[in-house]
Image (tube, rainbow, N blue to C red; front, top):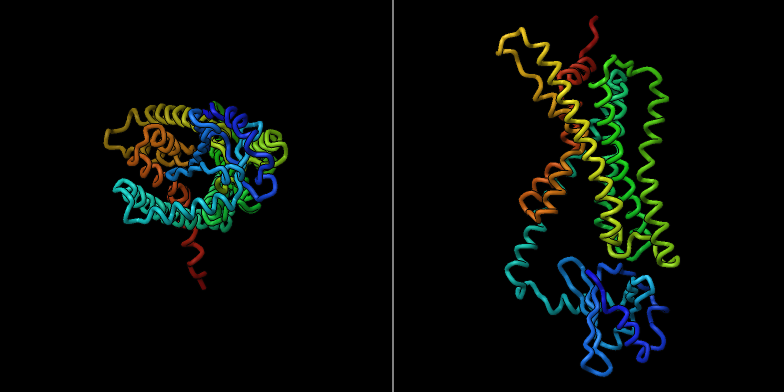
Length: 381
């Protein structure tokens, strides 16, 4: 959304506004992609209308006494007094009762409620499963191999990321904690993406190595190495957002917490979340496909002399391996790209229940059940 009239706004307002109230009031900043300026040059002085986009709600500011309470900066960000926003939003709510909303708005509201309900249910199930997964790995040292430790960090990072997302939904905007939670949400999800990559890479190395690897040698050293590596992407991305936003706003903003308890700009979301996610998922899918081909080739050689009634273990193995790749995010990307509500709900279920998939893959099996069974058995007299 280009704001080609911003320069005209600055020139048109110079003779009308001497001191902007935004300089002396508590204000919030909007990136250029969140607002649009239109100017009617047929009148003197020109009529200026600024439209701020809050997803489904568009807030228009036209009165001169209201225009004094905002300011367009040199970097094209828009500063608006919070009390003006609160007043305008209150008027919108009073003028737009539920009974006057069109049917499509009712439909959107219903879909939103269903989506929120499903998100809550999926996240609760996922977080319970992740806690059970971590508890199981902590209880049984035999499970804490290199792959097991990687799975622990994958589960832990996903648990923290999902908890942070729930907290952000109930944190008030315009406050310091909102910006802090925004940084935390961004950091933790990037950390989870990093562990998806690490687990996929470890899977790729184990199944494609020409020589059998000693997976348990130097385990402590390797764990610290993987842990350090997992922090590189989130640290670089978050630091870049903070530095860029601080410099562009001349120290007024940090890139988080102005519009929501997350990143302020769709551009920042695209560059620092969507792009890394796409790259990591693409690499993970390549690792996965190569691994599947390797397993398939070995299984075919081993079963060449057996009857066709031999159980097919490949499908189960392939499904289990896919849980560490994060490839379900592809469905979310397709849903956004195609603007498909059906794909959106499928993506919500697949990604919201990642914890359940991890639990079912690595914990809910005969080996782990036998370990629990051995704990419950009474010692023989």
